[in-house]
Amino acid sequence: MIHPPGMLHLYSVVIPARDEVESLPETLRDIYETFSAADITHEIVVVDDGSTDGTWELLQQLKEKEIPTLRPFRNEGAHGFGRAIIYGLDHIKGDAVVIMMADASDSPKDAVKYWRLLNDEGYECAFGSRFMRGSQVIDYPKVKLLINRMANFFVKVLFAIPLNDTTNAFKAYRRSVIEGCRPLIAPHFNLTVEIPLKAIVRGYSWKVTPIMWSNRKYGVAKLKIKEMGSRYLFICLYLWLEKYFSRGDYRR
Image 1 (tube, rainbow, N blue to C red):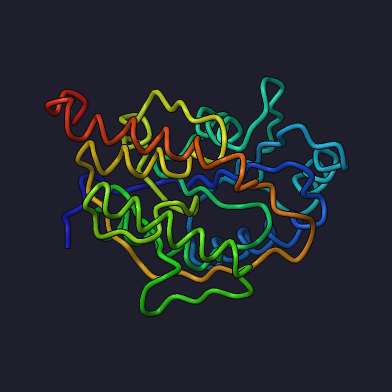
Image 2: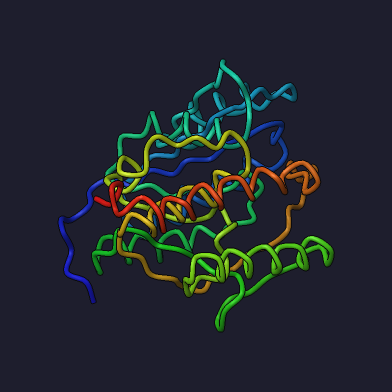
């Protein structure tokens, strides 16, 4: 066990949301109830990233009537999954943060496990894996699953790391890690690999735990595999160059 470098006080949740009016009520209620039951002081930062389906109005209602820890923001600038997350990270108040999806695919109980790893055990990063003993995956589309496993194997070999689920956005970090990984440059889903790989390359401590993942009940997935391949490759090669050629200039 790593000794904590400092106890944590506020856990921030960052959720990018675009046209998620059907999914958000269940997602946010589950997070709020689970964190409250675990006695975790928290805030839920939801970034509306250009929704046109009433997502913003829904967030206002939930904040006023049901979820006092909800802090909705509207990204008025350029849109994109990565940009929305960065916007949220720029506005958190917590000393630790977990990135979660709006579609209820991530389990708040696993987010609590992350908090324990960061706060009780003192790790700087908490990574989940959907593909290790003790994990559970529900209704993952077969083609996407195959591509996912190939992409994660590529990253694992390229960086020589014992992590087999780098591409999953659902991870948690101490705030000091986020600040140490700036500037964050990926505007789209490739941010999901930029942050953990930067954290690993720059020498922050981390631990992997099994998690549960379930496919969305409402709406359609925003990730377009054909559009993202080159972007993922760019980020991986960018950080591979940092790992092997920067001579440690960017390590903390």
